[in-house]
Image (tube, rainbow, N blue to C red):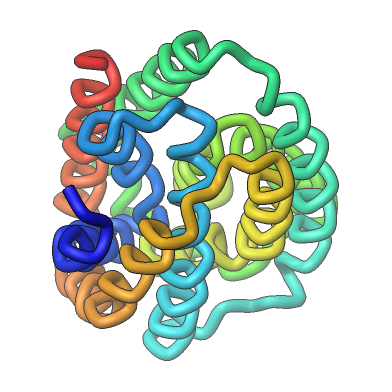
Length: 257
């Protein structure tokens, strides 16, 4: 198929992924990677590097929308950003030499574990207990928390090309008392610089298709704000269940390759 004729497909794919990604606070790369592997038969590393083109633009727009709805304390996440950038760069360099099939399987296992964690969070007893703490929900991070979150998200984001925010959000909601939407906004703010670093590393290694990545990014740019608006309208327990379904769907896509 001629690449020019494929542009509408890239735009539509980017719009679909961008909307869902903005709604659940992941930037869309989580879904984009297995879709690129399956639809375009990309090696795992090339899919990750290409998805990062879309991730960077979508995440920036998502942060803007989350910040407009509920102001993000950027000072609170600044330390995590620095640690995230360093860890992402090191992990992205290591990821270039990992066997693509092994990397894909490890990614699937990681997503399945996160999905199960979200299912556990939405069990009747757990969700009811969590809702009683929403009135005094946290809004800032301690220094030590920022360091650990930055390190964990950086390592995961660098290795898999995406996914750093996946580990941040459940930790912030379960252990530090943040609302789901607040955690999603702050998590996205943490991973932007690291995602840019990862994109540069993957591009330097020749693992980025700029035509596909840019087309998907443009498609996502038009719908991101609507995904964020829906996130704020949905009950928190429903948002978490949707998140877990997205993760299980992605695992299924990865395992079919």
